[in-house]
Length: 584
Image (cartoon, rainbow, N blue to C red; front, side, top):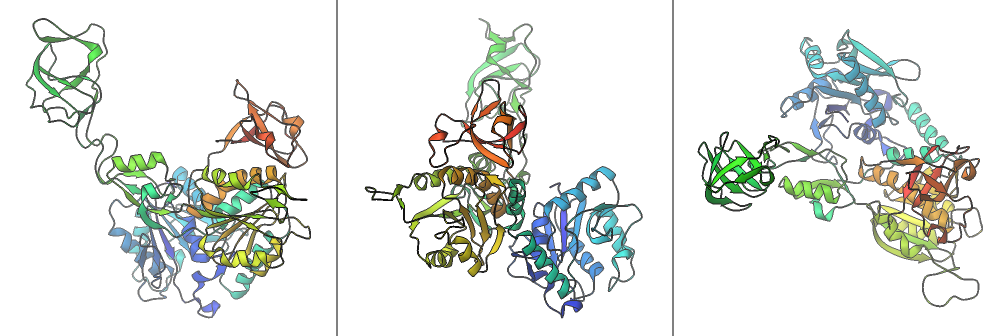
């Protein structure tokens, strides 16, 4: 998200709702306030205006309009007052009301894009009927402050009192508000209808997982213990990098134009800083050493020669370069090293150490429990009549680790009438429950019924995908997400690889979801009536070739393969397709 601040209006009298706390009303597994905060999560600062909410994390600022219930204009003024006391205020401010259950970050991004392109004082959303939604908008800070300041009274003023002449309207889905109990019922019914037993495409399912599952609670932790999570606030440098001017190369620190008289002392990284240079002097210096005062540049070893008289000369026709890394060249104290949503990776941990930061507010990593189902499955020991070896349970922790998910444990569930009920009740200590098997419609496939009995929010009932069509995803009341995978080994692995990045993004707020694509030379041969996932090999020219025949009952088809490819229905030879690399 572009650098912006946000004001979320979460107060008001809610007279048409019987005085209930409207922003706290849950639709689709999350409150309307949570939907609003999720839509502006990438903002530099967010102010929630309304009654104090102790459950909000400390990075969310809070304010109260005066008097309470004095209307949106008074609430906006209260939010502006809080932001005015912050350092480095953003030039754009998102203003929205916490009464739109289907509001998404994508909608806010669209408003921001129009705000940047148009240069208008304000950009507002328009709902499906074309009605302007003045409480879903992006404002120029100066325009919003000027509009508020010109009013003699802020109490119970309509939003139109603030709307400037220079505005843009952007039609967007999901910006209809819920002002009455009937509208809330309709919104909840729409969620149920969306989650009805209609298979979702892979694209639709990924979108649901990114935007509908609830985010994990952020915690301030040591970054080295949080790999796989994502920043819940920007990572701010505690010190500049470099901390002082250092040599970028082995060579000589010189002063003036040369030739230079070489001194006998030497500057080493971590050693004592050489005394200052006078014009015409040079001192031997190593990469990373603190350059002395008076240094005009560092000249690389390969660009100079030292004569018998001890004078240093630049070789003819060598380039003139500085080769000094100056203090703050990479970032200054207080600079943003990484924005909200950056995954906690080895690169981030290293950058944070360079910025003298060891702890940060992080969501995740996702903690998972793996449940293998079926009386016929045996992990260890000799097989008995009718049994088969568990060929995927032992590798699932490694597969999940590719996407930053930590596995707590792996258990085997027998086919009994109440087994799933017990597992789901005990799932509250996990962020993710990966269940393999029992997702079909057979006599032993009890997962769907058990989810219905827990009143879980059904996110994905089935997929328009082969293999993997019987996949089910739901979120329990405890917040745990259940990923039900087919028992077929290849279908389970392919679906896990296709869905886990989106699921992790939804739970942690991670912004890293890079789709790798490549030409598929035999796409027409492997395509089907719905999207397929097939093993594939990378070719020397960068294209891929997929397997036309798949044996899904085991993973031998992944031997000597470089990844899986997601092949759209009716794909043609040479089309770009998504690649899911096999990392291990």
